Image (cartoon, rainbow, N blue to C red; front, top):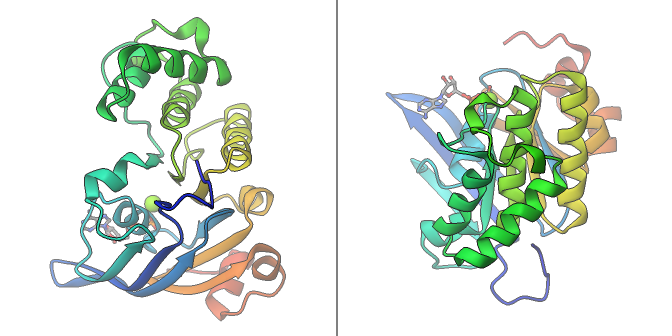
Length: 246
Ligand SMILES: Nc1ncnc2c1ncn2[C@@H]1O[C@H](COP(=O)(O)OP(=O)(O)O)[C@@H](O)[C@H]1O
Ligand SMILES: [Mg+2]
């Protein structure tokens, strides 16, 4: 998690002139922003704006076609950076094995030893109310339980930064609430949170600041209160009114 005094901190993250093209089509263009070491940033924008792409690029799952993604810790390999980050997807990506084993596997990939891995995995399941399901195959868990397991796995990894891509869009209100509570727990524990959502109520509840994307361009990076009360771009104003047809 974030210790601002540590010399090898990943943050701030500086994204400059970032572009992603695919088959001649520009999907992200000229995206520039900085993420400081603390806070919760919510990514907003209409469907297809490039929110998922942007997070996948930052998490190192895709390579930009132009521009730069510079972590404060320069010169580290993608594999090294990935070990200090975690990502949670709309549909949890889980292995065909038990809940506890999923978390232990992620820790062993990070080089955490067996005894320490077992302890951290059990703690994480406990924290997310999953201990009774520890041996159950992850694939038979409910959607809400699977998402809690994905969060427990991320928690066990103690990431400096956590990317969440619409983590509640397939969940009912109770499961959504537990994901929102988890986001607050990560924040309190010092993890930098970056999350996309299409739920504006959720964005208001969770955001410290907002990145607003539209058509592959970043139109705003604004403190949340400013964004919701006085959006700077006409596109954001239309988006907040529910009028943005894209
Ligand atoms: N890995 C990829 N390769 C090529 N095109 C992609 C990839 N991922 C997404 N896209 C395209 O990029 C655009 C933005 O997608 P996405 O980032 O998923 O939008 P959002 O998450 O804001 O709804 C869409 O047109 C989508 O089809
Ligand atoms: Mg998306």
